[in-house]
Length: 201
Image (cartoon, rainbow, N blue to C red; front, top):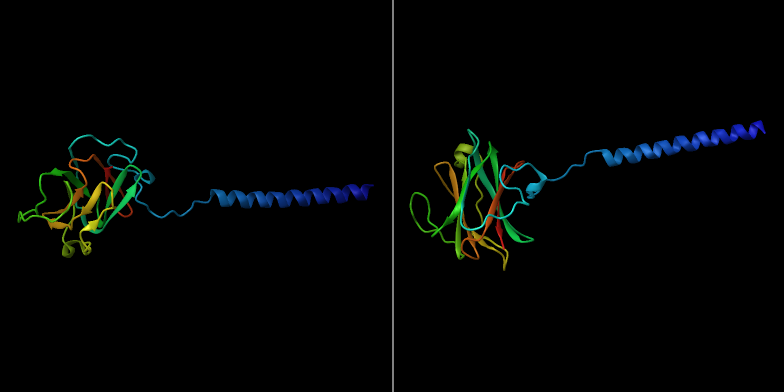
């Protein structure tokens, strides 16, 4: 009888030890931080402007934010994507510092400095000026070379996005919108720096 009790106790201890090891392994796998790739979703990071779930301002307006002191950036990519209720334009940058912006609708699309017309399709012209940028020989980084224009999504609120022009520390670009003065909002992401413009459907 004594031998049977000892055997049972040994089995119980062995079973408990095994269970503890299994639970410990499960706990470690669920609590270890996961490596997540950067996305174009401002909710995944701190924004310095309107968050994604903010309402779209109504009517034509101008949105501005300053670049960080000493910013020296290049626009390395421009992309357009369709989302539920809006189209998203992403200006991705590389370099040092944090970009600023000045965004608003204008009657026509023209180049800074020369005043030459910019060829961009759409009923509305949303002028985007990204602040804190420089020429490649200043930043050491080549600017996005296209192809241009960057097409929008068929049937969406963004028709296309023009090429960029660097002038006096600003990158000028135009978003051609399907209708004049469509509502828009702006947000920002880091790693890498991105200026994000959502145009409501």
